[in-house]
Length: 298
Image (tube, rainbow, N blue to C red):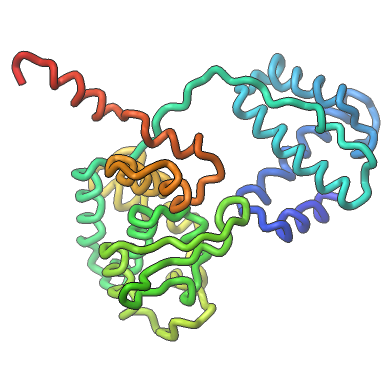
């Protein structure tokens, strides 16, 4: 059953992360059900009461945070959507299950200040291998200057970028939730892509080959992208920098320029404006500057 579910998730356009995580979450329910009921898990035997008891178990016994329990519930809603489609159940036990209310305020995401971003990209400039430098610069510019997620960068093919004058853009064919979007590119990103394409052996812009390649000539993986970001963060003496930090920087910079939530959400591929709203929250530096303005010694 799990193999068929995984195939369905892929066919439905779910992200790699979702395809990996959702079956593991389902296994949590399966294990709990079998230990509680003493019977083999069958989707059509699970009732709404079972789900409520499972949530209580996760909350009171395992001590999961409400936000993570909600993630589990969202996953199970997806599974029972699949089960209904495939005729594995005739009733969806998730229909009347509500998400847990969470009182926790989300902290503002971490982003790079202009000075930190400058240090980070300067570290890439110090890379001695010119071909690798061009590739890594383009990869990081796409995250910091176009807001792409790490898997979206990895998934890019050559045909997904356009660096023609007045048409500069990148096409994200499978964003989070399988969403399609086209993101215009600023001059920093375009310049990095132009430099990179000089080293790219296949310069046919209509090619469906991977845009970014590893040293083994295979598609650059999420893991390798994370590693190279960590490497340059270490070189520039910046702590806790990930590909998502670069994406957050893109969103924060747009918010600081006064662009509305709708524009930022569309460019970043956010499913909810609540996600985008986090970038309008003040960070530590914003709070520090605010307090400093009322100092008598400023």
